[in-house]
Image (cartoon, rainbow, N blue to C red; front, top):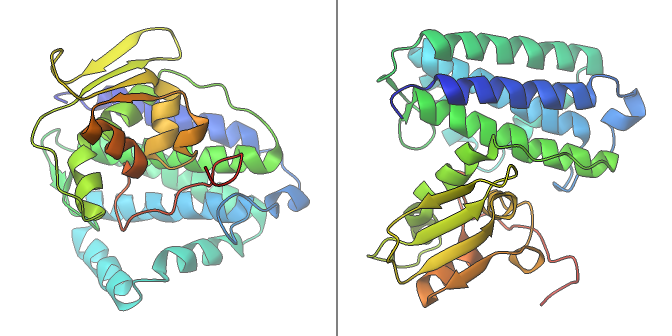
Length: 264
């Protein structure tokens, strides 16, 4: 992506939409359990604020970010939960203010960063566009967890294009992190956007194909829904296998969500 501005703009809008959802919550709603084990609504926002801060350090103070990586290596199984616990312990008004300030600071830092810059991360280095895309993906996915806790349904938008593209680009990573051989041939992916537009990836004549709603594909690659509950279709053995292990986020294989009807 030559110009990262569109994804930065969409990240800003995604954060603003989630902000509107949580801004008026009472203390009891901040304490509601979400689908993530042990995490409340406050934990979800605290995690976003914590990751925004890490992203800001990666963009603006790489020495400080290196120290954060050292902390993560010292507590590999706990550092994400510890960060969420620390933020969730704050009064909701303080947590909300900190999240807002962090979002704004990261937005400004990404806009002035050189378009071709690459920043350190807990995984491979990230470009400006990749950093913004990762933050948009997390904001959207954790926003879904919050919406589930509140019993509301969020209307999907074409901002999902960035998550869908990331989901396609992380195909090989998903196979590798699950210890599976990476398919040699590209897949064809055809997704129907919320607006009705068709988003396509890969060669038209590919043997392996994935088709369906873009929303469902994004739910799959962020592991916010089980494949059995989604209207995605796979043609070809490798494409079918991909839908069982797809993940667009870094780190070890996620456990995903159980199907709504129980074990298939």
